[in-house]
Amino acid sequence: MRKKLIFAALAVFAASLALLATGCLGAGTPVKTAAVKTPGEIAAQPDKPTAVPAGVPVLMYHSVGPERNNDAVISKERFAEHMAFLRQENFQPISLDELHAYLTEKKPLPLKPVVLTFDDGYPDTYEVVYPLLKQYGFKSTLFMITDQIGKRLTPEQLKEMKAGGMEIAPHTHTHRELTGLSPREQAEEIMKSKEILDRILGQDSRHFCYPNGSYNAETLRLLKEAGFKTAVTINPGWTKPGDNVLALNRVWMGNGVDLKHLRERLSRPDYPML
Ligand SMILES: [Zn+2]
Image 1 (tube, protein in one colour):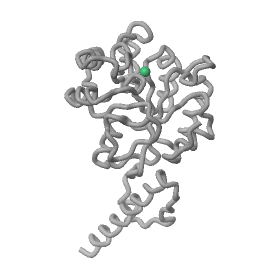
Image 2 (tube, helix red, strand yellow):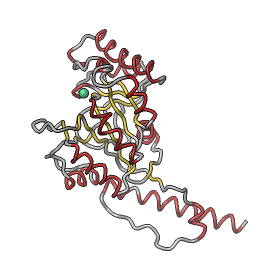
Image 3 (tube, helix red, strand yellow):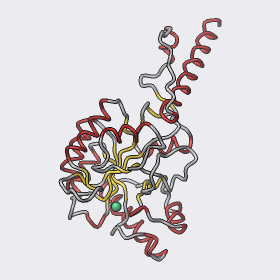
Image 4 (cartoon, rainbow, N blue to C red):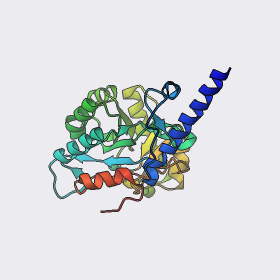
């Protein structure tokens, strides 16, 4: 009985340490965890430590290639540098389902969580991004414009990337700005892209990305009706519990984001804009 009580007390102690540690990411106030662990504490800890952080950055990449005059295109070298940095610093890329559970139920996440998103679906997403993410074992999400299937990427490439840990989610059919469309046209853009991906990949898509971050009340209504769990914008900032899950912020990633800026963007939600 007494042993059980001690064990329970240690478990509570370990849990509160985990909660304290969550302050590290958001507020930037490092909290030291206990230096010496008793056998009870060690037993009470899961294999991989988890926590409920103050916020999570969702990184937004587009194309990876040599184009210099478009900051939405990041060079292969800089992108490789970013991914190596995430690994060195022990960042843990999580899925959008994991992000959703954290945002809506404050479900714990691995320490140093980050979400990797890639918009539009370019040939380099398959040729450059996917092999590197697979090598690191990083989870990610590709938001695919479905009328580009068979042009920029083939159904076979999408299937292969999905099997390799990249979620493929709809980004409308033709990438028209939704706010300029009638409710019927908006519904077509959203549902056609969902249905095409669901058919090719044998899935039920639940995450969405607005072309150019543009949406209105009708868009939100349509996404809710179709059962989408999250949708991402291009508004800058981190995501946090209490955010509208159908209007999530993302952190811009381009050539201008060197390692100093990347570190900044991953360590504080109020990171300076470039
Ligand atoms: Zn796009």
